[in-house]
Image (cartoon, rainbow, N blue to C red; front, side, top):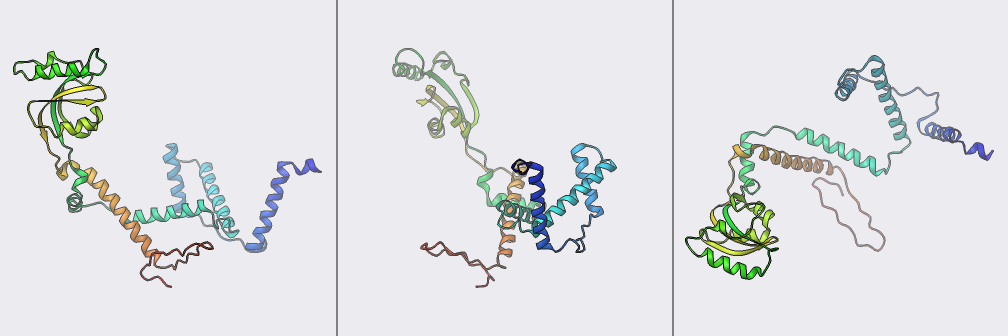
Length: 289
């Protein structure tokens, strides 16, 4: 008898009997007229279209019948599960429903921006679409791995660079990134040499050798030829980026408006745990108390 009770098939049948009994209690006796499940032509077309997108061909008649039966199976389980209250207090289901409501609100808010919309957004958020400061400079590099005293070598190089007829190419060590840097963004300089080095490049006077400045690689004497300040780009250069940010800002705004409209229908009462201070909720226009 114990061995029989351990059989998975018997356990499954017993579980089915329990669920059937619960369904009978909730939804009525089995002799009641069954609820109607309608599968519309539009739903069938959508099933076929989804199948074609995945498999790159139309479904066969048997496959389409299978898709319809699978839809009916989903609907049966959904209705019976809902009748049994399986969805109650299920955090996964609650979050999924919230997501679908948010998708619904986002779809309703999706429109194409006009040029005036984009120009207004760009004018209101210029900092998001500015070019970075740029610098053009050259360097003489002294590797931290060279033999001898790096400080003494730096002093000697500094004295030689002070002479007007010296060729900088004859001084220093080879550097993987080279000696000439043309129109480099500040973030690129910081990435390649470090933030402290970038601060120097974008603050020292133009013209003349400066340094040495420290980087993770060693010491650098630099000659900054020119710099360009940050500037807001025209809409024609950043249209796609502005459109993406505009759409995202509008999505967030409309989603919040949608939620606040729904929120006014509800009175929220928060019962704190025993001994805990009262928890206030934001007052919503139109909310009942």
